[in-house]
Image (cartoon, rainbow, N blue to C red; front, side, top):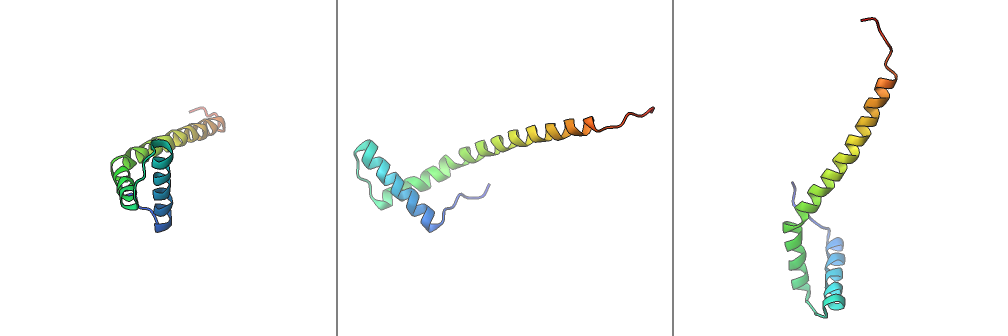
Length: 82
């Protein structure tokens, strides 16, 4: 799996949301550096788990679609004597 990276704009948006969360929910003021560090930590440690769950979800959707295609192919199959 490749490293999860954000554009500068995405990173700034997420960092601001982390800071806002800490302020509103925990009544704590954290700085830019701490919020960036937290984002990097979660991206590295938790991000792969979310990524893998996304893959499992995508596989489930694909499996369902492939079953439908397989059923449709059986429906148009022509009977033969051999």
